[in-house]
Structure formats: structure tokens, C-alpha cells
Length: 149
Ligand SMILES: [Zn+2]
Ligand SMILES: [Zn+2]
Image (cartoon, protein in one colour):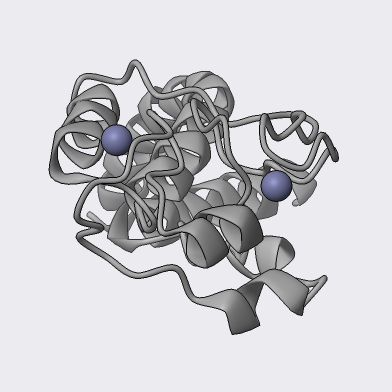
């Protein structure tokens, strides 16, 4: 009786292992998506904010890999994708970071956040492993135990 029970759980474990291997590929995309969704579109006018939120929603938002040149101060201080003006300049001149026009800014730029260097890394915090991650982790451990003995 008891051996039959073991058999059942074993075949289930193998089934899950396939899914686990496949999941590695998906994991990266999820992290990127989460990062984009956590993004606060500050220093933007209503129109530009809408555009960027639309991009995030439809997976078209691509984060910058390196700082861009600000059209105002000509420094490589633009750290947000699709922006043409850096945060300090936009704050000072009251311009939209993306279109560069003097529009009403929906979310004011937080100038304090700009000076903190490790701020961008903070968004990388690995809290992605939700319920799914735990489930697969358990299955995997069980499989390894059976293999060992
Ligand atoms: Zn600037
Ligand atoms: Zn704008």
C-alpha cells in the first residue's frame, strides 16, 4: 500500500521537473517586467506619463542600460528611458522630462532620490519568488532526495 503511494508522488515529481527547467527562461522576463511596473513616472506631463504607462502596460517599455545626454545641461544625467531632460534640469526649469515642454507635472520630481547612488539597485530586490517558486522548490528537493538514496 505504502509503496504504491510513493510511486504516485514520484511520477508527479518528474513531471514538475520539466516545468522547473523551463521556468528559468521566464524568470528573467518577470523580473524586468516587475521593475518596469514599479517605475514611477515622475517629472512628466499628463501626456508623456500616459505614453510611458501605456508602454509598460503593453510590454513595450525598455529601461536604459546607460545614462543619456540631457538636452538642457548636456550631461549624461538622464537615467530614465524615453526622457530627454534630466531630473535636476526638469525640476529647475519646470519642464516635462520627456517632451521638454512647460507642462503641468503630474508627479513632482523627487530631487532627493536623485542623489542616492544605490537607489536603482534597491528595485532589484529579489522578492519575485512567490507561491509558484516555493512549490517548485519543494518538488525539486524531493526529487533530489530520491535520487540520492
Ligand atoms: Zn540636465
Ligand atoms: Zn511631456
